[in-house]
Image 1 (tube, rainbow, N blue to C red):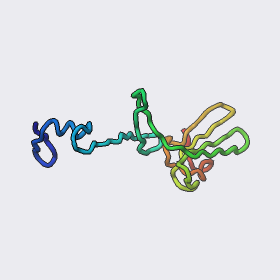
Image 2: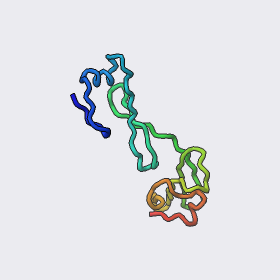
Image 3: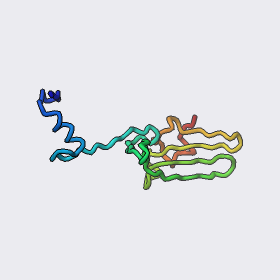
Image 4: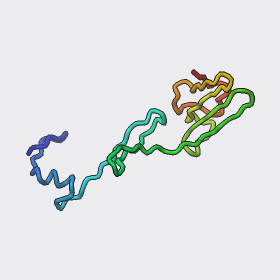
Length: 124
């Protein structure tokens, strides 16, 4: 069996190649981690299989801040734990309780400053 690599051609016995993956030979088993890009958190998240073979996505817990400004507006912000409110790492929602509308800061990504939620952040 010939295996093509970026370094050229390498001839190896098929059984050794298979054993490398299932541990039946005296070769260390390769462990591979699966990851996916989460566009909501703009970060890599680990994917694994549960006992039933279903894929499970492990997402980090987010810190949440709520600002009840009075009146009919509520701001809800999410960011990684220990995030600074002045850093552009927040996903922010503006909730209007009169119209029952929920607007996200433009882009709905983790790139806004919590401190600017009521002043310069644009919602759509």
